Amino acid sequence: MDILLRDRFTELYRKYFPGAELPLALEYRNNPGTAEPVPPPGGWRCLICQIGRARNGTPLAFDAGSVTCGGGKRYSGFSREQAPNFRYFLSNGKEGVVDGERYKKSPEIVDAWEKNIPPFDAGGKPLVFTRWDQLTEADKPEVVIFFSRPEVISGLFTLANFDRSDPFGVITPIGSGCATIVYYPLLEQ
Image (tube, rainbow, N blue to C red):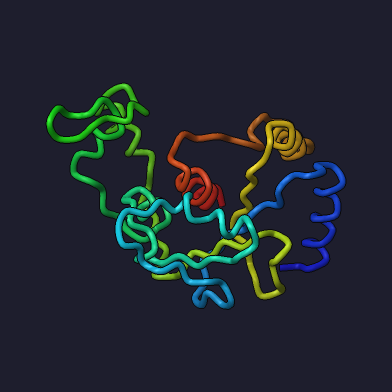
């Protein structure tokens, strides 16, 4: 990471968005470095629920054992497995089998949607989350994630489109938290 860029961004971000939380950077690394390894949980664990510590300043490294949520494993590239009744889980459920979350109208729409979701493989590398101000020269962020108030997000959307003639400097595809902050941004590269 270019430290001058990191520091200049931090200065301007704090000036124009006072009080806003600094973003997180994520990258896949061969070696997690000084990031704290996230141990395997005793049960179900959501990736999004765990990154709060990174947002507060503790760099975290996730591997395939750190995340037990099937979607989290899939969208972070730690597994290509899909739950057998996922099409029902994401839509209207299947009585006696799985409750539906109703993100999609029908299992058939889930099937069609999934055709737009190419598989992703992390290649066995840990996924490291680091708060922006803690990035070092050795870091090579692949994605920057903003958890912000609406006026900050609006400002960032405007800045992302400032030098573009088309309206697609920012897109918001539907997905779980891990899909929207890990999977889709990596696909955009």
